[in-house]
Image 1 (tube, rainbow, N blue to C red):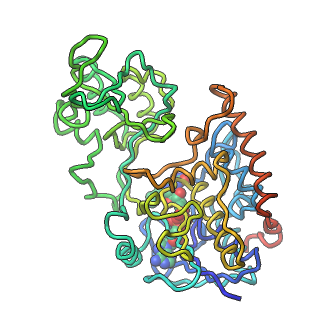
Image 2 (image 1 turned 180 degrees about the horizontal axis):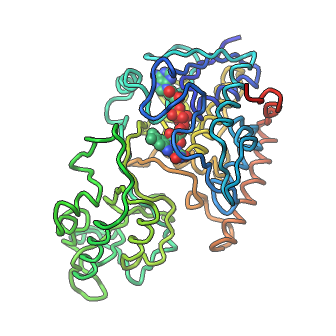
Image 3 (image 1 turned 90 degrees about the vertical axis):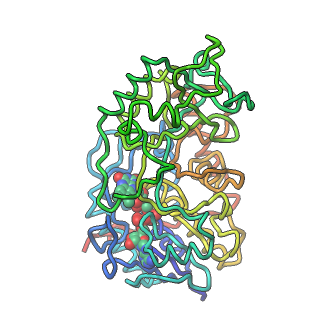
Length: 447
Ligand SMILES: Cc1cc2nc3c(=O)[nH]c(=O)nc-3n(C[C@H](O)[C@H](O)[C@H](O)COP(=O)(O)OP(=O)(O)OC[C@H]3O[C@@H](n4cnc5c(N)ncnc54)[C@H](O)[C@@H]3O)c2cc1C
């Protein structure tokens, strides 16, 4: 039978290879470590966790908790291993990273239909292929992808601005306007002189995430973190992303000293991103400092700002919702490379790509997860063809379609989770997406 090539034995590639092989299709899985190391991995194990050992919250009050439950129901290898390697971490699912990746390595290496090759792939093979080479994709393969897509569609760093939910913005303070009266597309949070300088001082004093050695020298002038702009001069931000020119606050009729602009981030208008606010401040500091901005006192952040090395593709332009490349239908992409953020999200994308690669080989119709699920809503965001200025995204309830009845807070999340699991079951039945049993404990015993 025709085999499928999977490139990259990280979280996404291991999950994809497992899903394909469990459906009776031979897999050739390429992992370049240890022959060629990356800047962040330390071992030769598959699905190595490069940093934190946390898979984040287990609660269905969070979209990532729901995503994990959906993956269990879809027979995920990554979730089977994570559940078995669990360590106490309160509401979060954290794992013993060694046991976790040993499990995955043992499951993949002993699978009769998976051939594991320790080689760097430098070119795209013919035949059904899943590319899951992650944020640190090797330079030769990145170059090959650049030739395939063109340089406008392949990025090498994240410059992520925070995103807040619309319902948490105080629109009595934040006013709608575009600069110089060119429409009313933006929400503007106005700051007085005193508020602005207090804000700049807080940014300068805030705790920052240390820069890794391999991330040095990657700042581009058009994309500086706000703390770097603040460091260059106390008024730099007021002449940069916070410039108030062409804006009048309708409450005072005057121009504010500075503004924080928010731009609509999804079609439904439920998410708004802070324009030009990429930052390396720690997450708690961002929440504390950004909530001092007038209008954002009660902001609910679905994503916080960051800036780090990350190879990812312009998925809205390049991928179909099935995770097939629009220009070659037997070429799938998965994992962090498609612009999902985080271990769980990467593995989930690997699961869907693997499922669809197997279905393509078997001549079955390809599937898209329901948009009301955590998996479906995330991939709908990632592959929404009209999205511009694409930046990576993690699972969050802000991406879900509205409920038939207006609910807020915890009630809303509970109702979204219940709808998601119901729709997932119905979809699995209708599309015959069976969860092939997770590996047996014996298979998973670490060697
Ligand atoms: C420094 C750093 C810290 C991070 N910290 C966190 C964190 O704390 N929590 C979190 O959720 N996420 C974190 N991430 C994001 C994290 O990388 C992803 O969540 C997750 O690892 C992505 O899974 P993946 O399968 O897409 O990529 P990876 O897990 O990186 O797997 C890709 C694999 O492909 C291999 N590969 C690359 N190029 C080739 C090639 N040409 N041929 C063959 N094999 C190749 C690599 O060796 C690697 O094993 C971090 C990322 C970085 C870079």
